[in-house]
Length: 103
Length: 91
Image 1 (cartoon, helix red, strand yellow):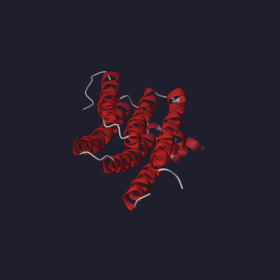
Image 2 (cartoon, chains in turn brown, purple):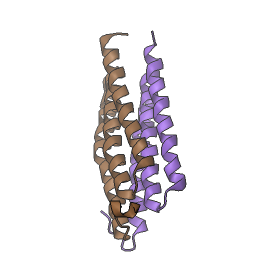
Image 3 (cartoon, one colour):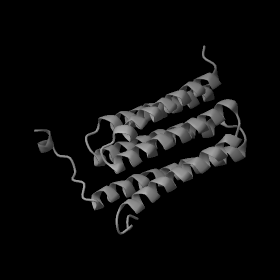
């Protein structure tokens, strides 16, 4: 593999690491707000890193522009969606989890 | 030595696996919001997998599919959270 291909694979592997962190957070976190935190931050970073790798990998100019648009959409829409869901949960009166709930 | 496109396809398979893991939270999630968050994560991982397949096969038409899927995923989350609260004033 050429150095550029190595860079692409390393970027995609970093993105896969953050995707794994998001999946573990979704499963293991105790309540909706912490799950929204894991989903919005780690998953957005994983998506942006991986699609940046895709933008590097694609040859022609137009598809690189499309991948860049996908990166921008991910940066804007993913945290917005998580914010809207967490705010809807707050509107419905779901209490945040605290350590007292464990006892 | 691993082939370049094979490495990209393996990472895409990993993202599909993470999407399936998020489906566990869709299944058991105590509230509707847990389910919507998990569906959102599964959709994001699907978009990434489609983009990686586009890079592996050098088929840039798949990127259009990924773009449309990303926007529909966002619309689903916003619509669910908006129509779940009584006044509809989330955003």
